[in-house]
Length: 331
Image (cartoon, rainbow, N blue to C red; front, top):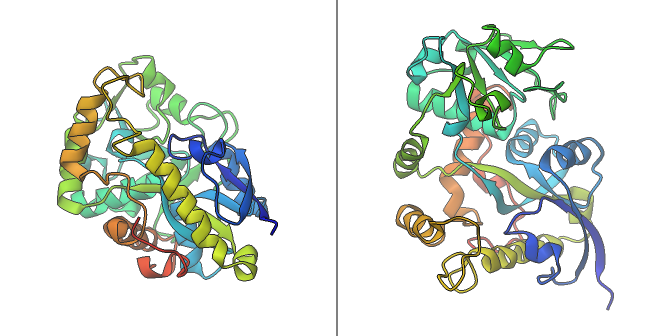
């Protein structure tokens, strides 16, 4: 019996590599895999539904679900996770010493509705009492012209947003004193070069993020995996087949036998890799990169609440409505 031919767009992670090189295949599916950076595949999927299956911004997906206009069905694959406390940068002479000092400031970001920015603002509101409408936002490129928003913003009028004009960049405005802070998904070049004009709001971000996780159980998920709804309606079994394949590929990358915890030869070019793994286990347990609904429920509840509070969705989206019901969750 011939397999169903589908295209899949995703980035080259350790946890997707076994799919890319076909050590792992989805049962009944012949995947033509397109390896693309997220910033390239997301607009192509959101604008044109170019792929049958794709990695996608979690905030974009949740927002579309909340608006009732979502052309995709997700599987509970937490393909990209990262804490974002380290991504808040401040101008060193702007008088910002604590998160509460961001209130009333001019802050730049590349995508106000990106998952990373949504989680940063959710953390600020719920942990520090600083709401989105207490900040003057500037949206544009860090050091090159910015792409347009991934989806229409439809923001409340109480939120102050200016879009940069041609020739303006966020880094340039920060250096010139026209911005007080950056919410930067990518490391700013002026920070990499050691400019004295910029510093992280949380210089001890690792300890701050660990404490945040222990208290909230939120490990921010940036990207999920979605199936086009036309494919799902015709072949609902595909959702579970692809989900299982992503789980198997992740297991090859991170499990104890084949993964990072091996002193015979280090799998990654990190001198203290074993120490990092042991510390991660102490904080998260050995299922530190979990997929499925229940193990990620606190994070999914948070993103559903945040997209509503920040004005991107007209309602709170519940985790139980996010994923294809055929999927065997909990992996």
